Length: 171
Length: 197
Image (cartoon, rainbow over all chains, first blue to last red; front, side, top):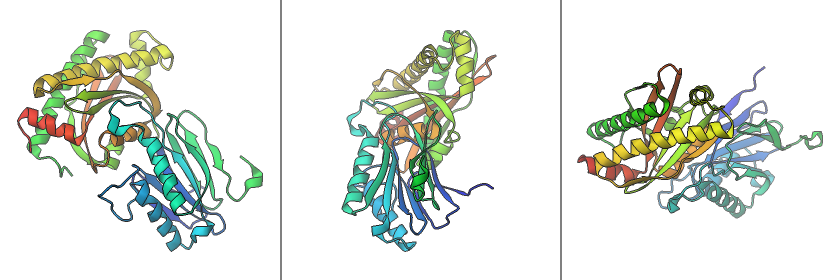
């Protein structure tokens, strides 16, 4: 039996209420994979955030920018039946794969993480786990039914970052 | 899809890429002592997601050499080697792939390719272009290309890719060569060629 994987590509978001499903983003570099999880109701969402700040060309509901992606994902979770109070957030990504000289683009990964955390704080969503920074690309898998998150780094093996509802089982 | 650029401009960029990759191939050919075939380069303005997909599967583990270009035009050159291509190239140069020596050899190949390509671009367009030292990274293709596109193309919805493939004769190895300019950089390049918007 293959588990259905929903691919969430750059600038997209997805919410699932199917416990058998997995939300997946492959190859996060400087981008952030933001998961919102409602363990009790077995609902989960994943946004693939590209850049920290929408600036003036803010497009409501866009998952591209941290400041618009957080409200957009929260809205989609609420619409799926998850009240904000039962959500926990997991952040993965935000690496800096190449050092750069041009000042305008210093550490997009770090700024993505900062902006996402700030938006979550404004929305009063608890952050349960974070796997960010460094120089390696990552793949995130959100297991909707378990409410767990697994991560794989380039050249490494998959590990459990967030245990979800079966916490006693361990990683 | 090319909402930002006219056909004439894309043709001009493709011709530029053609001459740039020809110059780069000549330099690599004398370094490796083998002849090199060049495909007709592609110049495409693609939405970011498609631009990444067009480079290959996101989870493929590849070695990339990134060379940041500074000066009159900001851009990044990214040269991608699959695992098999790294092994073939390193074998040709007599070093072991995956080792520090192997990575440094790929970095040097990237350096030679990028410097000659960018040099040709500069003399054709009249721009002062200065390549930074190469950075060699082995990682997931999607993460690497995505990071370069976002750092260079930033919030533009469309990325301009100049994409060339070089094939080394007898080595069963080809490598893909990307130039990703900032949109401001493309403007200057086009102005230098006399086909500004």
